[in-house]
Image 1: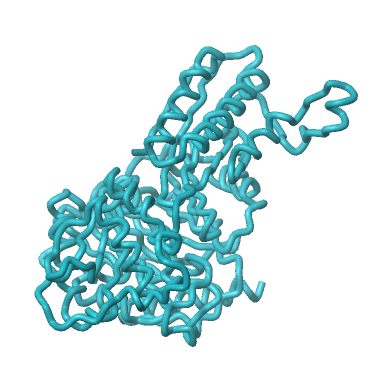
Image 2: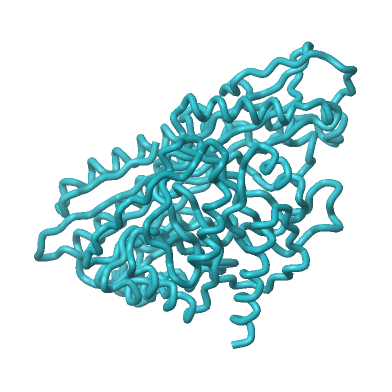
Amino acid sequence: MEAHLLLEARLPMVGSATDFTYKWCVNMGLSRDDATKMALATDEVLTDILLHGYKNESGYIEIWFQYTFSEIEIAIQEKGEPFDPEKHSYNADRAIKYNDFEGAALKTIRKMTDQFLFLNRGKDGKEFRLVKQFTSSHIKDLLPEHLDPEDLDEPEADCDYLLTPATTEDAEDIAKLIYRSYSYTYSKEDLYFPKRIETAIKHEYKFGTIVRTEAGGPAGYFAVIKSTDSMIGEVGEAVVSPNHRGRGLMKKMMNELIKMSKQRGLLGLFGMASTFHIISQKVNDKFGFRSTALIIAKSPQKLYKGMASQASEVVSVVMDFLPLTRLWRKPIILPDEYEDILSEIYAQFTGQNRTIGAETPAFQDPDQTDLGLTINYETQNVLITVKDYGKTFETSCLRLFRSIDELNLNAIYIDLPLKSTRINGAVEWLKEQGFIFSGLMPLFHQEHDFMRMQKIMIETNFDKINTYTELAGKLKSLIKMEYDAVQKR
């Protein structure tokens, strides 16, 4: 339940926006205390914008409310008078001696939030980002002390299993299942917090199936995480209890997820398969998923149980895609630089009763550039989504790059829509900025195909990136070649 407010830049609007912020935060799972802090921080930002950014002029303020399983983020955008927060620092002595409280509002905002970021986008305006993380009980806090995770998994003889849709009532059992199967090594930390699982299922951000034994104990779990801006989903959470592996439960759950996804009208499913090993890539391939991209430095280091020898500095992933509709169309525009590899990616999907249809016409080029920004503070990367290529593409990107420069990033990803001949100039310029190829992101934003490029900010050892399919191997070779060329500059 993401939300968007468009406010006229007038002081009477602040109270209504603050009230909405509080109620939305509570509904999304924040404690009342944390929701109050976010509402106060939002109030401070809006008041400052109106008092200083729109002193003698009219305008509008946009507020975007966004949710992830671990945090909520509020993005406030406006085009008022320019502002540099670094020149308005708070000084306690100055406040006491001279009653000068300049910078106090910014200090208050930082105190009320877990993360505060100011983005100066030049002609595209300014943006304030407020982040508050969920505080909830970790599964280890709900279990007896000094308990070995494996003690939770009682050996059980062959038995019949029951697959049912996962509900909010299953949240704690799902967290226990993750804990006893992987101890503390599972890559998605949110699954150790029952409340976060419960909230995500309640608001239908994810749906899945849980497998139980005849005695009612949880034996497996598999879920689809729905995209927030397109009718696709990620098969991103999967676990089978160690004492119930090798009995075909993963296959049963995957078949059930595909069925559930079609019933919900999803146009496709994708998986981000780890390159530590090829197991998940093999599973995806078996069910008809095809490799479309190799994303480097996707998340911080994780040591998987029983696979410590294969640990890498970062987690890179192969993007695998399964279309669920025959209406998927190959775009008419492909960038000259990568036309051959993109055509080969598309060709994988023909002959599977999902033949790509006729090409769709290109869109007309607008004058203004429209860029979206998603910051993942936990994985230390950002995704820039190009919604429209305008004449200001390069300068808009440079402003955004400067704004996020203070973040300690592993990678910057940029998704380019395959709908305009301007993509050729964009690709050429991005390569000059150190970006390299990543691959195709099918139906990834607003049901349109995008090509992803990536700028890797940390050293990457490609010898530790394992791929399974032939196409994934070709992607690895191409990306490594471009990566090496950037390193030699």
